[in-house]
Image (tube, rainbow, N blue to C red; front, side, top):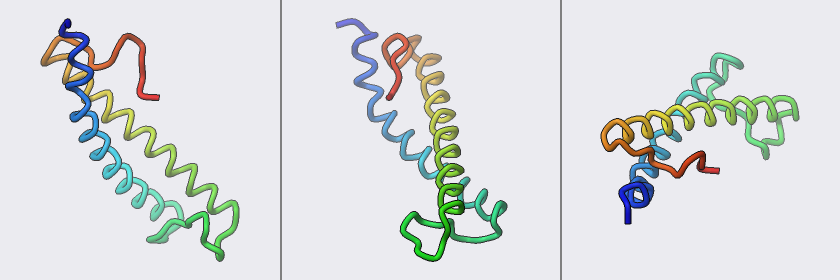
Length: 98
């Protein structure tokens, strides 16, 4: 087996750790962003009876955007670090996570 075929499997634990880190960072960023947007400590949940559709959907959209940006930034940083240290990109050509 070539080095290129072995690296994506070896990258799995690193990818898992980066996913955990990106989730934690995104959660903190969303909490701070929501506090700035609505001046509230807690964002609405879809099952929160006392919140309206607009507020719930706004929170979901903001949270989704923040999680996607943070996840992509962390993944890209990790992939570039792997490439710099090994000379191999951690995923097959043009293949993404999704």
